[in-house]
Image 1 (cartoon, one colour):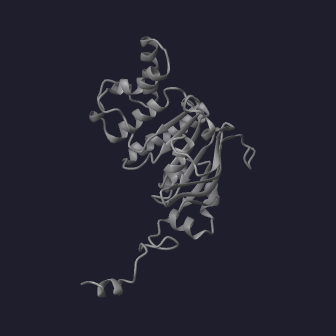
Image 2 (cartoon, one colour):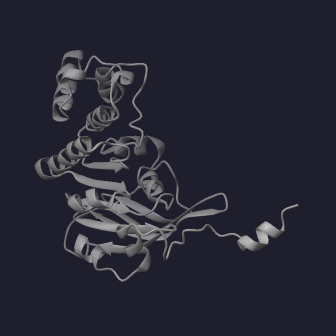
Image 3 (spheres, helix red, strand yellow):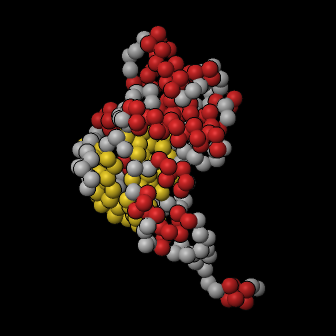
Length: 270
């Protein structure tokens, strides 16, 4: 249970992760409640996507643990990890469709890879998933014939193939026009409200995430600097949080990257 009495889907407990000598996540802890929409926000390069990769078992923490439905992800065997990943859906930033096969075959891939379903059953299920995202009519197209927004929606259909209980969206709104953003928001709301799906959104798009979030975490510099409801975040006294949600170019996070004084740099020119 979290502090609000909700059952916990994912518990990240004191997790640290480094890439060579760069600290990406620094002793972070968060809880993802079941059946809710949780948003992890923050500036680019602060470790948000790394958190998703740690949850999915793609990366291993140097310290701490991650529980998914009370199972320690990083203590599973490879076979056990593959099985539990069937309960997780992930929308990659780039959609990551297979470029040399059709839309239909992209969505059919999880069924062919993980089940022994008949061709007829796969045909019907693929069409159902494409109908959910409004693109059943595009099933015979190739990925290079899709717009960016269509590709994202096809990727969602593929991620939903095995009916996961958890969906993770990595920067879903980047590079999308307002209509596509509206479609993606509607899809996320329907998945959550109609199917009761637990959703994690990693993003730096404040306006869109404020519309969706039941609970938010603000990350910066590999740390959790703020958490709570939209109202809690808006009322935060943390300078990093306020600078981020208000889009201020300078503040707790300086505009200038650390460097020697400009006058010294000029004088040192040969």
